[in-house]
Length: 291
Image (cartoon, rainbow, N blue to C red):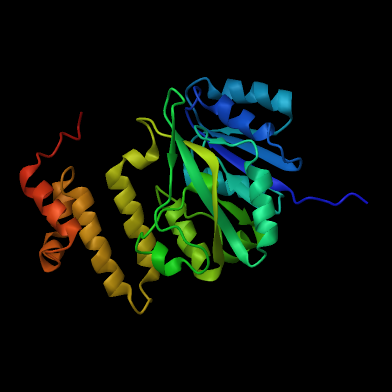
């Protein structure tokens, strides 16, 4: 009898990535793994990507939904509802999978049944497909919540594979947050072990329209996510770490927001984040955000 292999649902939330979405989809339909369910949801794109995706959905027979804009978290949650796989992966419509990614990661998940989610390393690519391998400093497996909540290392969202049972335990993505992934990793890592696979699994594309380029909204999403953990015994210590981090990240471009944390920077004056933040706060000119 042929051994069955777990179904993997891959969700692509697509928005105005006509230049990249074909590469993203083809990197999934051409995987070496045989049991994949691909779901592409276009979140109200105004470019030609819906037309391109529809043509590919006919060619490759995957699920395609095109509707008005509702935001990334709502799109991901819709994908979760439509999915039927044992494992869930998410791929932004400008990123790509390495062609053996799913096969390698399923093997890793099967070999480590005690973990709820796994992640790996990415190769950064630019608009011209130039590659730059990116290591993950301080990467860790096991109970990683304490490290993750103080941002000791970063989990690339495009590399994660999550068991369906995990979403059933922690719930769907928070639609009130502009950036949804860190909040989800915290909720998962608080209840489940997480595994690091020391391999390059995916390609992450950097360009001017990446969500990660909006520092103020990233900050606001971090604030929103951390409010959920007020009952932790060490919440005050965690917040002091973050207030100094926020001061550094906001002090050059968003001085009004940075001022809220100025006293915390002086309180922890010899922290490198405080020092750099104070230099930026007093000596860098804030850009005109209305341009």
